[in-house]
Amino acid sequence: MDVSLFDFDLPERAIALRPVSPRDSAKMLHVEGRHITDHHVSDLPDLLRAGDILVLNETKVLRAALTAIRPARAHGGGGDVTVDINLHKHVSATTWLAFARPAKRLKVGDVVRFSGDLTAKITAKADAEVTLEFSKSGDALERAIQACGAAPLPPYIARKRAADAADFEDYQTVFARDMGSVAAPTAGLHFTPELLALLTSKGVKFAKLTLHVGAGTFLPVKSDNTDDHIMHSEYFDISANAAATINAARIAGGRVIAVGTTALRALESASVDGLLRAQARETDIFITPGYKFQIVDGVMTNFHLPKSTLFMLVSALAGREVMQRAYGHAITHDYRFYSYGDSSLLWRVK
Image (tube, rainbow, N blue to C red; front, side, top):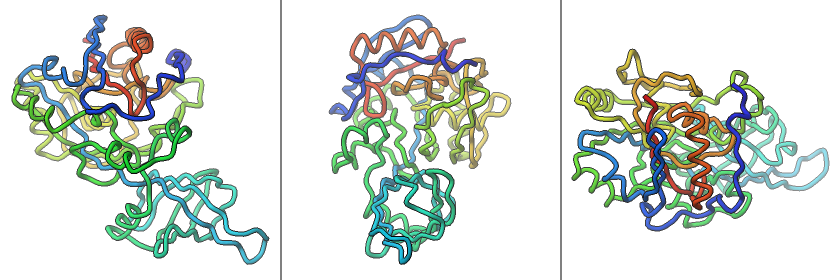
């Protein structure tokens, strides 16, 4: 499909730089067929029914925005160089792929220092992407990164302000458990313990899975046709218990609502002949209009970038023309966009 079909004009004022408080006071646009209505996230219990199941992504965000020093080289002149490093894919117990800036100041074989006891060697480089072999491994490496890293805010926020202490809490869901993401599953940021309890009291069920979000989620689509775009892969894990719970809810007539496009991508990646199968693997699923959904009936998600793979995904679910109209409504009615912005509840076109 022509990528320009998924374009729209977004005013700069619509981009949220901070979340609202409390989390569930954010606006929520409800889109069901051609019906578009305005709500707040706190209204979610009234929009769902007993037996519906919300699927949460319990990945936890690593403090993946790092600053490193590349020491002066013995030959070649110049002093120490400060480099911004953004981790984006876990490769092994000691190895990460990362984006570096300025990458031109790094070469294979360089050793960069993050703190007094954490260094990494550049073992490969391709444009702005580098492969880092760290001096620590496993849990020790995770703790070291947490100690010296900052919240990995999306580029459209990071260009306007630096991450601070508030982001350590704001950019993490209340149900986060499995460390491994370098970007938040932002639809889940709207939930509070109180909202989760109220949904439970209304008879709404929950299931949890993990998809570790990579920085590829922010990469623009540079091709003119969706057929030419290559998706970055991300790791997901759906347990046997979660699969059984979700399948049972569907069989009983409950609707499956993915909390976020990450949960949706995991669910659809693990569906076989209309049933969810327990799996743990990488997925590079790319959902565009024409895709036949097997598991998901709805999605709760924030508002996405023009011409992004995520706007294509919601257009596949609810209809491209419907989503263009819904986003126009959101812009006109001052909804806040992107990671710290407002939410929407979208239902699949039957």
